Amino acid sequence: MIAIAYYRGWLDDYKDSSLIQKLISKLSGYDVIIAPIADNRMFDIIAEFVGNEITDEQCRHALTATNLGFQYVLKTNNALNNINFLKEMFVCQKEKAHCLDNRASLTNNGSQKVKIARIQYKNKGRYIEELLK
Image: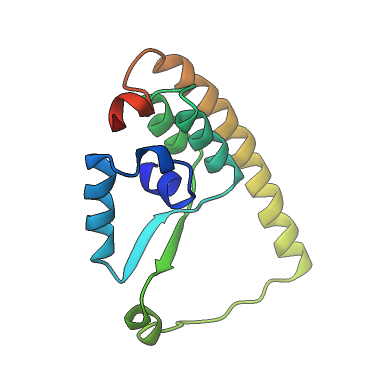
């Protein structure tokens, strides 16, 4: 969550923080990073964390509750040159509609879990400024 916020430019005030410097150094050594899908739900939750509205514990548990899938970030030419596509799939309109309905249901369920996580972990953990200053 800190890496996503940093690379989105939301933590410029903390760029010299030892935690951020350590994280950047660690991530710079990889060709590929596998991370949760960065969607609007994730951004909303992380924005609350960066805005000191929720703690790291609330943020972490809220993000877990959203059931995000994974994305693969290819950072280097080495990663791009070595990618292998295993298969290509097409879906018909009926399958697409089913997937969208299923996703909407999961999103609604996740939203309820996020609310519970915010309450359950209230006053637990640290705010962003406590972590990075």
